[in-house]
Image (tube, rainbow, N blue to C red):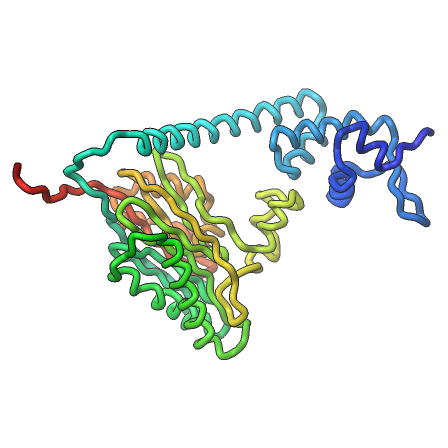
Length: 357
């Protein structure tokens, strides 16, 4: 048989040698032969068809885990899977297109003499769950600050409390006109110092932290760990944080599917958190719309209640206080294996005072 070296095979199928090595490791596209002495990979010409399919699917943006599924199917079933994937992409793109249109309209519209302002209506609740002997979560909601922290280790409870307490000055402080993300970043440095003070000098203790700071029209987000923030807008639920976990990194690399991640034995192993050694949080700004509903939660909710159920419960609840208690109840009904904390906040319009003309 005429073998193709990895370089020749890469040129023929338009996949890089680096990608081919990864696909070999993931058992997505194994070489036909590996030299026992040199370790060189060789491919058969008959493998080009599958390699080109993989390359085309990557151009579509399909995750590696899903490509593996498609490649294992007969042609008709594979075509159906590709159609389903593209329908999902178009649906998600339509939502982003509408949001982009809204932002363009807002940025190009003439200045308005509004008689309304936006504000938050909010509620926070934390529950120990049905298994853990103590609650190491902390949840807080105020007119400007929303926060959830999930502590771990012997001093996990004090760590989560200290992190949130270090941010609470933001709820009453006058926000500067400058970059609110800089203010939030500085506040998180203070939270890290507070965690170190209670962590007894060991990185066995620490906490996640997910917080939103309201500026009157925007929400500044800070996030580290695997607590989460969601946005419910127009009936669709968007997760606006990214888990800093080993399992999430494996999903991102295509080594695990989302379904496999749910039951992975290391699903709670964190890559980043507020500890004695610190960690760099994610910082973002989100423009708010009237009718938006935000949810912050610890993994005591997200690990046992599917996102689809969270969306349905958030949509059905008439007010934030109803929503947080309904979500906590859902986590406990699912077994309550962990502490569960929820903060729900609605963006609402209220009448603003204006001088008489």
